[in-house]
Image 1: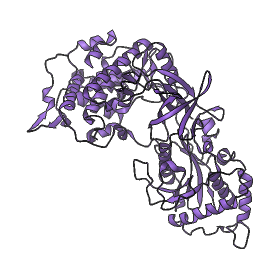
Image 2 (image 1 turned 45 degrees about the vertical axis):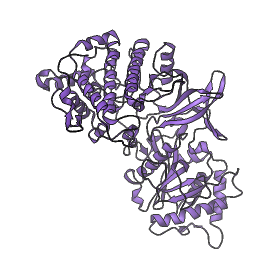
Image 3 (image 1 turned 120 degrees about the vertical axis):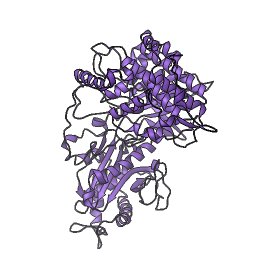
Length: 639
């Protein structure tokens, strides 16, 4: 790693001529720990440390939006006349299912959950039977599933679902179902006052997250809440959740019938599945549009899918071209802010300029659904206006950070340190031209944001660096990734801005033509000499690996911040891993995932100071404890 650093851009060499910096000594101690101490095996993987719901509070949830039903149910063929015909039948006979004066027959007094479930499923089946002869096309019968006391399989938590719709006519109370089978989740509450963010809305949002995580081709999820007799219809997408106006199912029986038949009759695209991902026999394909026309890529396996609702929601698959299974490709789908520069364009430019050890470009596109670019506001949400929501509150504009204020805050912190000598390790970076902006700098934030569905395909496949088969392979891959970063910076003038364990890859397959070690993910990358803001919203990067200067917003983002992130990656791996698939949770560092950025910066400074020995450096020897902190180099040598 030191050799790679010394061989980087000449502007880095003065940094190497100083006495060994504190973080380098910390790295030496971490490496010693990594090589000498055998941590107990744990089943906790790195990604679990970062798995949390990206649906914070009610900020992303909007309800009472006019036109919701027509937008999402209006294009279900034959729904409106069929619903009217079924509702008319419900009011006929000596013992009608529905009476205008009292509502639905058998509706439970007090709307207790178990009683509502016992009422709901049989009524839905009855409505479907009454609709026979009115449905324009036949298909698999879809039915409700009520298992409020039985956790569904396929989740990292034992999460239960009140009620949902599945494509299995035989599903029953005792069926063992998975989240991958849930098409439409529902949340029941007996109290009408539970129709709010802290109760029913977020509960349904958690169900939607499980569905989105378990179904890799799902673009959005349709669902419903029923609080007492009051129902809302919902969709959850990569901006959050929006809902219809509230209606009383006992007063508006036709609306209830229309919603239930809509749930039962919607096709896969209307339910939120990506029509460019298709299944033919026992194979799945991703369809892309290239210069010579449509091409189908065979999906080998899912690599990862981020567990979230609102966010980029990155999904990656390993694929190959038909007839060429020996040459792997990686498809990456994500939902990006449209104002950000396209990752595909950056990758294409890097490849054309001969950048080494960075994933090589194959193809990129904006996914098209319904002959339109697949974005949230226009395509997924059908142009519905969230400013008409009953709970909409305009967000205050977010002006760009003031360079003057940033420098002033830096002076304040510097003057408060002992003798003014201490500084963040990122302060060793070279001054940047005045035209540069930090990654957190952006124009005034628009009141209503949008995301667009982008697809990038690269020609290099590997595994995350922390899964390396040996320490030697790990360090060699780290060196290769640093070489790739240097190449990206010097040949293409780009800063990657998100150095993290999952973005540093290693290829240990002898017959794989991919780079042996390489960088991926230019989602947050920026041109060093850009003339306009990057389009990012706030600090960019993965929190635990962000440079101290970036956390404090003291400095413009430079290559030195990314090099510091390489250090934090190796630091993290040394603490948390003892080999591939041998990880553990270290409670002391778990809070790095969520604490305030300034507090995190202070903790990071504490880890690299010369004074004191952190408790976690202590390891058990065969006969006594050895404190590796006492072995730090005090000679001033950088070798």
